[in-house]
Length: 362
Image 1 (cartoon, helix red, strand yellow):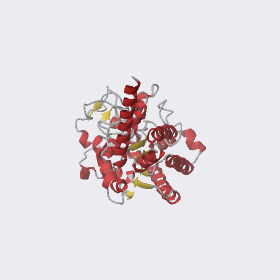
Image 2 (cartoon, one colour; image 1 turned 135 degrees about the horizontal axis):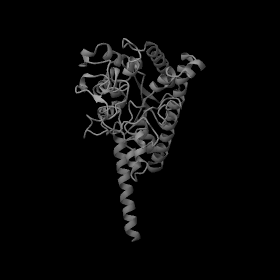
Image 3 (tube, rainbow, N blue to C red; image 1 turned 45 degrees about the vertical axis):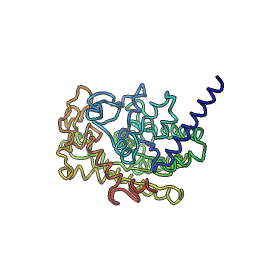
Image 4 (cartoon, one colour; image 1 turned 90 degrees about the vertical axis):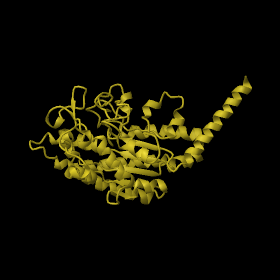
């Protein structure tokens, strides 16, 4: 009996070794995703108290199997498309793997810590009751790092992580929180708030680096003042320009910070995506991209279908491909697809200093 157990032990370890070697030999062995509802693939489904969930119809109506998975979208999101482009399956939600006996093997393909309602700051989820702020996401990643080191050994784990992508899509909820809170606006200026966002994010990026991250894909905040939830506040349906202006200023600070980190941590490389400019192009010149509707959400109720989330009682459009926005805050699958195309291999004015295609080739 002991010999049989020893045999299975050897076979298991050979499998683990072969799997880790195969992963490390891939150009991009894994993608680890951090962020908010723009890239959440179902983590919030596992937060019992969270009100920020999308695990019900009509979400997922265009997802394979027409299933609502927890993605705030009619189909796939940017993280899904980007994973596909680098030859990986979609990174599974971290919280779904905690009870899996094979979670270390699964984690080697990458995982997603992204959570609807999450922000750079703790507390951006107060409205939604529960999400995973960036600090908690990075904390969970540190556990993954330690598991990989334990399973692969420090050298192989370091090699694996150095070739993996670390994708960060966050910041919108912090700005929504600021402009939606008279308490915050009375306590601090928008300039001070945005500067603190950048400082806080910088610290989290440094922590990721200390846990092996070397290739970063970081997106700026889009023209969030143009989402249906903000347009409905205007009698004419115009964008909330003040919020957009501060999104631009945050993005400018983020770009400078990434450059600073590159000079200090000279073994990192990164792709920065100018979300604002690309999404603004879609809003300002929709016909050029095959869109017919930029103000109204596809799924919702009331003015611009933005007075409720995409609940089962909501109405949704038949021409999802024609809408830039799926619900009151989130893009459609068609928009996500375009954004991911630009992130992967767009022109340098939108994705720089390297495209993701160039980043994975390093």
